[in-house]
Length: 297
Length: 305
Image 1 (cartoon, each protein chain N blue to C red):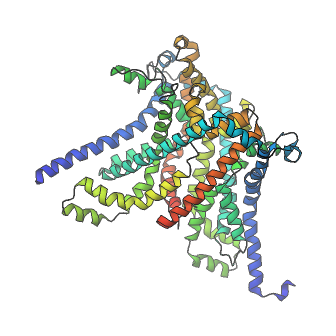
Image 2: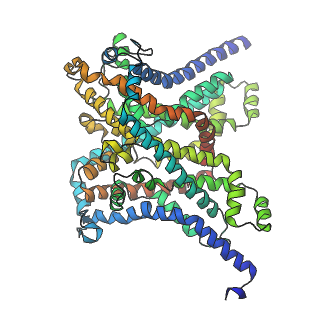
């Protein structure tokens, strides 16, 4: 009896390990594939001969990126955009969240503001009216069109509020007795206490604005103004054409048309590197933030 | 006059002013990019011409809404939206729940951490990047088809076939998000009293029985909350993903509300019509969010917002 039980549990354990490792590989291998493509010769890529290892290893694609001025222009636009969005998001959400945690007695207008915030989260004007507003504010083709519409991430405000509520009242009261203003309480007590949740909110902001391609697509009319993801998306369209034409496989003969695939793969890899650099922080803060955000009182 | 008021009252007013100042910058942007577009929805009831603006364009009542329901497209678009979104929600939840239960069984710390690190990654990558990854894998001569061919199966035109494209959308989305979504379930499992499992094991309950009678009931509040939360996005089939993967040959099965509004309204410059479709979408989404919030509050004492 005991024996059969332990063999049973051994089999079960093996199966569980196989499934879990299998799912892990399912996430890992496609990434390895694109890296392998970026390091392969164009002929091998065009013939779809690249699997997990580079074929005809070459770093030529990366050499060509170094000289690609449009790629770096877009990369720089994205870096600037991420930095400005981050600063703006923090300057707006941190004080706002703090004021929103005050009691109605201290801040009578609190509920009005809160309702405005919540309603903006539940309902929005949608794609077209937002576009018209950005256009009428003369922001088209300006980097601010990529930054200002996302200036108030309501979810981040709520996440920060949840955190501020947990800061012991005594700290704050002591500071107020010492004559601190509300701004001083915020900057000298709340902000240092809330570092982890500020990190979470910052990372949301960074990942969101780095990854966004849609803003660039609708607000930027010239390729020179594209942020990195919009630029890469414009390259993907070439790939899409290719997929469409693949039905009549004559297109596959056209190696010249295909030879950009390894270059595009290399661009994608380089565009993802900034995220990989901050990935350890993402894991640490965003995942705790997710649990924090989903369990609200 | 202020001097006559008590000192408490004046501190309070001063504080209140400081709070207004803290909220002010955010409110400016919220009004500009949140509430101004809502006001702009008036264009759905006009023949809006950008040069004339909201105040100069002619009002046409419900013309665009009536027109919308005469179009054969709209039924197809709504159907696609619901099928794709529901497919993603249901399969995504099942896989994340199953994955979290299985991952919890892994005792090797190193293996567990490594797998977690890998499966969380796709969540943080843009669909622009993942679409390129997917197109390299799933094109007619891509690695997936080569594997199919090598085991004697027929090649599948994943990206260009009306039969499989929707499945590809659902599958790749589940793939992208299952890891990250499993985080909350894993947290719920960790919160279950280990004593329950031990007692059941001593009573001879098999692993399956324990999962079914202890783990899953223990996760139920979080599962209900996530179901309600996810169902609110049933009109959001995932613009970024679809836009980056679809092409006119598969519009039939993959054109959803957001891609439709984008193509017809924005690219096609039928602003009023696009705004009308968008308004319907936003209203339904609002109703769903409010009711989901009510339901979860009743069931789990938690709120979505």
